[in-house]
Amino acid sequence: MKLTKKNIDRLYQFTRQHYVEWYDLQTELVDHLANDIEAIVNENPSLTFEEALQRSFKKFGVFGFSEVVEKRTTALSRKYWKLVFKYIKEYFRVPKIALTLFLIATYYTVFTLMPDKIIFIAISLGALSIIPFFFGIKIFLENKRIQKKTGKKYLYQNIVSTLGGLLFVPQLFIQLTSFSKYVEWTTTIRILFSFAVILFSILFYVAIKIIPKKLAENFTKQYQDSELLNKA
Image 1 (spheres, one colour):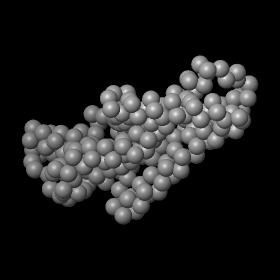
Image 2: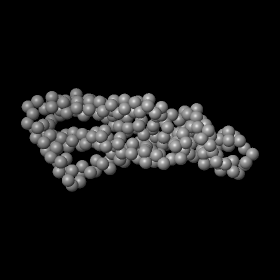
Image 3: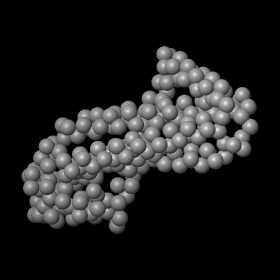
Image 4: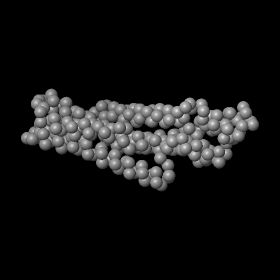
């Protein structure tokens, strides 16, 4: 049995009815269901498409697609962070490590020369808090625009919109600001703090500017040649 476009459309509808809202995940499930249904009907020619669909769906167990959604979300989050760490490593190799060390040294020098270190710390941590939040909103609005234009929601875009959970880290920086006045800012502490600020700056840069593009490219490559995607 070869599924028709009408059958494929029905499978997409079926995944939505069972609370799979992400189009990229719908496509993976539709691909799996389509192959399984074809195999079931070939073994049992008397079965209708709907009967074969129900048999295939029963194989997902009592929780249906929910476990698949959870596992796929976890897997994509891990992939996001693997990409983040992959590109961060580049900043600790020649020639980017020279730039990284220069930034740390510059920040440390300015920090040391500042007469009011508490204000400087507040500005630094404030920037690390506000900038990711601002870009997180920008990415979220861009995803909404794409969703409105295409009528589809993508799981990878949802991961990107929260920067893989990184968007919630700035809350920690806000709390650290209130404790900074109780710290004795020795040379060692200033060096460590300078390193941490630059490291998180690089982390946010990679998460905001590089990873969204890489995930989008990966998604396009993965689905652009999909027969099911072309039929949908």
